[in-house]
Length: 181
Image 1: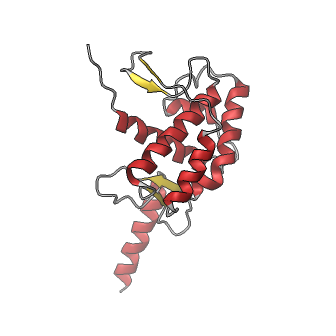
Image 2: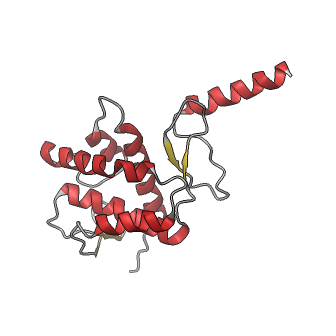
Image 3: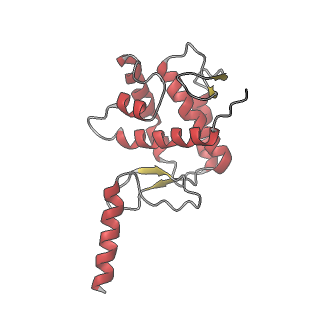
């Protein structure tokens, strides 16, 4: 039997997780394990506290580059992703587990949890850079927000981060400005 994984959906979900984690790492009480689990990173719930801390530390080292993605030069982004990929042991293999369809794992079965997460993140970024550059990464259009978003819409029309208050505040302010004029 042939089972096909929805590779594009996997990449989109990973990139959305990267953006959420990037935005959350600015918050003082971020729970990285819960965020990884919510974004369906396998092993998140069972990973050791030390491994989750290493994921957080490694993502924090990537923050400046991740935050630079909206409007970044593709060649610059490719350079830093390639530099980071060189530091991760990647050994692709096909697998099906936990009732999931056949899919690709980037790290060997014995890889540490942080290596698995970082490899997934970097490979999703690499695929996005290869397919469309940096144009789907954006910064929230709300006046007082600097959060990132990944625009998975068909026509690249997203303007706001995942916080619904940003869009609401902006639309309300625009409406009031129109009413005054």
